[in-house]
Amino acid sequence: MNILLVGGSGFVGSCLAARLCALGHNVHVPTRRYERAKHLLVLPTVTVGKADVHDEAELARLMHGKDAVVNLVGVLKGGAGEPYGAGFARVHVELPQKIAYAAQRAGVPRLLHMSALQADADAPSGYLRSKAAGEAAVFAVAPSLAVTVFRPSVIFGRGDSFLTLFAHLLKRLPAMPLACPQAQFQPVWVEDVGAAFAASLARHESFGRAYDLCGPRRYTLRELVDYAGRISGHARPLLGLPATLSYLQAWAMEFMPGAPLTRDNWRSMQVPNVCDAACSLPFGLTATPLEAVAPAYLSPPA
Ligand SMILES: NC(=O)c1ccc[n+]([C@@H]2O[C@H](COP(=O)([O-])OP(=O)(O)OC[C@H]3O[C@@H](n4cnc5c(N)ncnc54)[C@H](OP(=O)(O)O)[C@@H]3O)[C@@H](O)[C@H]2O)c1
Image 1: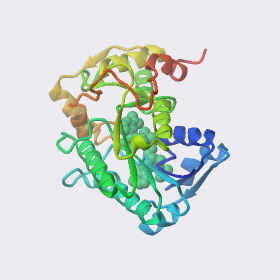
Image 2: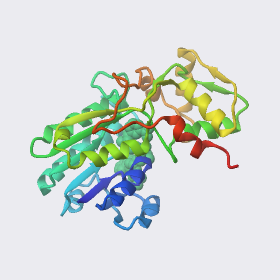
Image 3: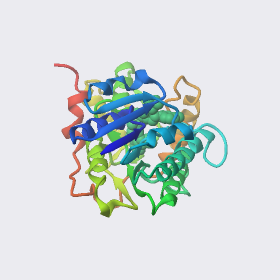
Image 4: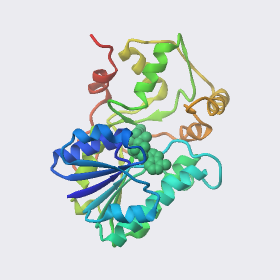
């Protein structure tokens, strides 16, 4: 297949590009910054080009001759504005809608779209509400376009910005004040996410469906941060903050460079980020335990 991989330069996208390439697909990755996607050029059937995917004319050009489009674009900070934050509206709702319509107009038959676990129109955070609106937007274009949506919990793997970030922070701190220590997650391996995307491409039963993606076990945030510390060789005392202090910490961190935590992130963490059933990946895939993978990229060099 000829596949347009929008958001393909990031953490999940880089993994998926390699998998699609290994399966013999031709993949094109548009990016705002060519430098950010250059690492993909070692993959023999992957091409990279600078493009503004928000521009409908450019999207139309990018769709030309493609058999499928994958949209992975997402942000964790949405800025101000109703109903979700202007950034979330642009990236999580308007862009997926533009991509779906551009695919439909160009006769691209297949769209895989990345959402997030617990995305819901009534969710407490702009992130989750905007992801729900994005799902609705892409499904609205069906049935002429065969759409499949994926809704993962937090994703781990080499290059993640979750366990790796905590390991880096713990290295620098004597103890860590931790917002929302009881927040729940069911982390899923990036390779399992990539496998689910790739497997769905030609599966008719996945057309028009949304799949939650979770790992085999649930953890609290405290357990995950503690694990990242122990495995990276930087075990530290964790000072779990109560709800009000957690919120104030998130508010204060919005003003730090890169805003490592926001009040919207805090609101997302009020919803358990776990799957209903003991999870379960679709298409007969088996979820990989965190403990089988994380030591390979978190452990200090021997
Ligand atoms: N990582 C997780 O734990 C997790 C969990 C649940 C859901 N998700 C979802 O999975 C998707 C991929 O996540 P990721 O961790 O791979 O993210 P990432 O590493 O930050 O990559 C994001 C990608 O989106 C593109 N992008 C970002 N902002 C953009 C904008 N304003 N306009 C156009 N392109 C933009 C970037 O492309 P360029 O910078 O090259 O243009 C990059 O390729 C996202 O939709 C995210 O919400 C992630």
